[in-house]
Image 1 (cartoon, helix red, strand yellow):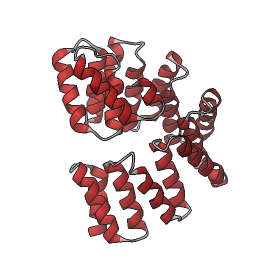
Image 2 (cartoon, helix red, strand yellow):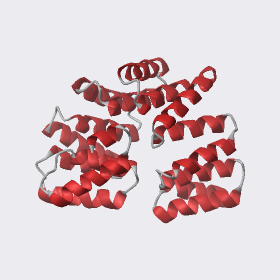
Image 3 (cartoon, one colour):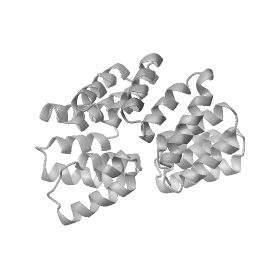
Image 4 (cartoon, helix red, strand yellow):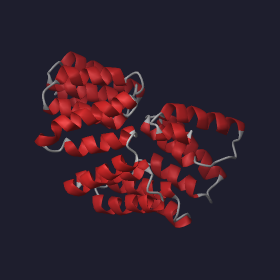
Amino acid sequence: ALCYLKLGHEQLAINVFEERLSKHPNCLNNVDRYAFALKMTDQYDKLRDLALILLDRAPHLAETWIVSAIYEKNEQLSVQLASRAVLLAPKHIMAHLILGHCRMSLNDFNGAIVDFRQAYQLNNMEIEAYRGMVLAMLASNQYKMALAIGRESLQKMPKHPMSLTLVGLVLAQQKAGLVKAEKAFKKALSSNPRTYDAVCGLCDLLQKLKRYDEAIAVLKKALIYHRTPSTYTLMGDIYAVIPNIALAQEAYQKALSLRDDYAPAIIGMKKITE
């Protein structure tokens, strides 16, 4: 399961985790990684059930509070839950990673960078630590630092599609880097078409260049692996810009059929019907 996650095969990892849990329900090693994969694939019902089971069975484990933080929709509370996990297990990498993501949701980018760096110091081959640092640095306009971190990840893991994606995300921030960014995203997707950050990065870049048909084609291909509210919402957003209101509405409806409380789709639908 961990190997699948490293390769970006979230659903395959989820299948392995679930098979193990069905056979060995008390074996909770890396259950927080399983929860993170569930969130990445928008499987919130399973994530909720997992959080409730762990709170009942294992409140003494850091993993329990990490999973609760991953599921929790209240950003302030999620930080408190993840902080509790860090206190329980200061050397638990996922505790620091999830705390970083929780701080990101509160726009505390500098605090998130500290958390992601802590995870990096515990394991400098942890790709999610690199991803977190780059995203937080970009969000706080620390372009040069983000590029340095992205390049470091590429140097250490040159074949990892996420390393290529991170470099692409940074290069795409400046007009002079758009061509190289597009190549990085496409190389990442040719290595692993499941790399969702590369899908989103490439679509954003193509929208900047007003190559809307190509962006839609990328998302349609992504639906093979990511039939999620997020993918349909991105498609709706692009159709709304073209504009093709009928297709935008259809895409948002598909997103909401998968998750009726998905805020980005609700917002998109309101914009095209106002």
